[in-house]
Amino acid sequence: MRLINTATLEFTEFVGSDLPEYGILSHTWEPTGEATFEGARAGLLLSGTSQGIQKVRKACELAQGDNLEYCWIDTCCIDKSSSSELTEAINSMFQWYASARVCYAFLSDLRSDQSIDALTECRWFTRGWTLQELIAPRTLRFYDESWTLRGTKVDHAAVVSDITSIDQSILLRHKDLNSIPVGRRMSWAAGRQTTRTEDIAYSLLGIFGVNMPLIYGEGQKAFMRLQEEIIRQNNDLSIFLWTSKCGNKYRGILGQSPDEFKCACSIVRQSVTPSLENPEYIMTNKGVRINISLSAGRDGLLVLWANHVDDGNAYGVFLRPYGDGIYVRANPARLAVAWFADVALELHSSESIRYLSKEVHPEMTYTIDKAMDNAFLLEGNLNTREYSYVSTTPSSWWDHDRKLFLRDWTRPFVAFHIFKSDWDNTMRDNRFVVAFGINDDRSPWFSLGSHRRNPGLFDAAMRGGLVNVEFLGSRRGGKYSSESIQLERRATRAASRLGPGAGTSEVVEGKWTTILTVSLTAKTLHGHKVYCLCLEATQPVLESIRPSITL
Image (cartoon, rainbow, N blue to C red; front, top):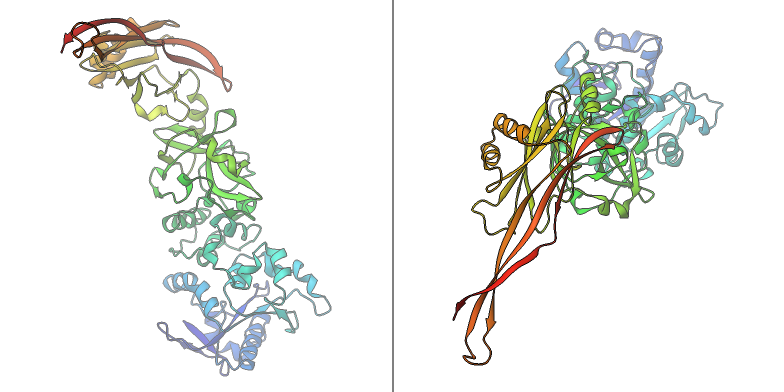
């Protein structure tokens, strides 16, 4: 760390954690120019007359008055020609402000004749870098244009909190910064500006306790990288609570700037349901991988609840499946809102692995919109007393939450569901197959197969052969028809013999049967034509009872 000697205005470098006490300056850069590292090395801090150099000398003067031998000032204490030094300085800056004995906040546009209420108009509260410079120091003093002391952060905590939306407990250091939701911390930077686009992300590193290399020239990608670093170290779902005014129909799961997090300015963490209490998620090259339950939203959308509330309302984001387990942010202009006590009741899907796409390309939008055209909806329960769902092939377009097979609209296709009937104890293999698809002429078809009925289709599905399933199923299956299979269950019970031979018993056998029917119909769902595969099982009927063995 390079510090300025407040008496000589010369640099002294310190390595490691053995640092002397020092003061630190917080300010906004002036259009007339600032003191530079090169100028300071050339002795201009002693002889220069520019406004920037006078600012350095005044800060050192204040530090001397506090019996501090050293002072740190961002404009001239960093050799910005060295990318490694600049990276180290920016990644360390929050800690440097936190470790300073006192921070001098110079408000160059606060006139001497203005009251402290004029703080709301000061440019210092609109800049990106000054956010961490406000939060990190234990002691921060405000000075006006003439370097007159106008009070401290503690003195004006209420006013500063109103201006910045930062909790007074954070300003007064009564609460740990990490206890504040990620989305809420991000909202503090909403509306703040930096000269370089990348700096809006780099200025927030300390707020979230993360480190990352600097890549000037990457633009908005810096903010994306910041969120990825936060996700690597924090499983706070509020990082997804943002809204966008860009007008996009779909977006990736990450925000594009702190401005989009303004909606999260007053959220607090509250356990909405145990499944959301401590979710594990990581960033992968396929998106954010998360194991979580979803609930149904309006217009066929799904909702990921973020386990945070505001004034009793739980907040979440709308999702739409893209395929292959990938989901995109839908309706990004608004958040899903519900009374938090009702959210647990709305969760309609079991926990499963999902991938939240990091970004959405234009071709993805077209595919998402078309995916529900001529999709196959599985109506009825996936799991009943008579049967239970096993799998779908291919699985990439199966939307388990909505029981929809979202077809690839560009070409004909074939798929099949596998169910099993543990209730049926008469078959060697109690699984059955519901195959379906779209022909070349765009007509739908389906066919039913089991160990007993249509065994060729059944065997092809068990081997995963989509070509044979399509050949056997589309040839045999029909359009808007129904097919049935019979499920049987043998049952036995012991019956006591009465009269002569009393005391002995006999086994009585019975056979229960139920008819499982699958039918194909069409309907409109959320503005899309879909085909419905309806599974219905009749009430089991006891066909026969006969004595079997006398004991």
